[in-house]
Image (cartoon, rainbow, N blue to C red):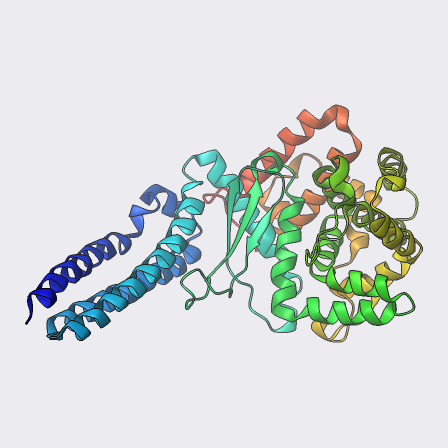
Length: 419
């Protein structure tokens, strides 16, 4: 072997040894989340997630062993160069796996306090319940959910079944971010679980086609709303489960000056101005007159349409008279995704109408946080809390306290579950 090849071997050998040692740190999941935090995750999710993450690290370890074997077999400068190239590729793969492990580790670590752990387990349960209303009847599995808390204004989801950063493995759970400031008003959680349902059922693509066809007399409007189908679908899913509370919560998240009229090419989010009014129209369609009418009037007054960029203003003006039709397409049109039925055939929004929620409160009385009500009506309890939060701001602190109480009970692993 030449001096040059000998020098190269030393440099490559050092790198191979480094990555072999580095992989060892990935194989122990407690390097990413404390054991106490793992115990705060539902048992079935703990097992599935650990197995998945440890499997990704084991696969990486085997690749490191292959690198070491290639190094031992290399005798020429060309062969050593090939090993060096493989080291660079391995490094990229390592960083991808590390990113996935860090993401789930940070999500799980957010459950280290008993209170926060219970609230997040309650969010897990709410998201799962929302999906159970649709997926099992359509013979689809409900994926496990891992909710985590983070800063900011908007929620988000890493969908189960989506390819992770390593480019090969699939996410074993729906990882849903809920913002800290909305933890006691988590209707956005149901919006995100709606994204998961739409992904599993192929609803987004079908809804896009239905909007394109149903609004065909105005091509620009049809194109825009079809492109927004994924976010509209998730908004619809949140509405049928939580009613007006989800519309008011959306209003509070997207309000904010010039961003109300922001329109970004290829962004699946509708222009906020018309998105809020679509939610109002859902309430009008199913509930008639109500507090959403005041919200709409205040919204239009706060954000005069003349402030919008001319192209956006024209699109919105053409969209407004079509909102009732868009609601019918989204919520009342039979879809293959839903077995040839509309979404509202599976989840009746009338169950979260304000008078229906008032009756729920009367029926439950002081036992609203009992296993019976939590096991059967947790989503309607969320709708009730969210409605009260939206319509009784003077009682916000009391409403938040009551919501926290039943969520803590829902997330308390020691409590018996309703049959």
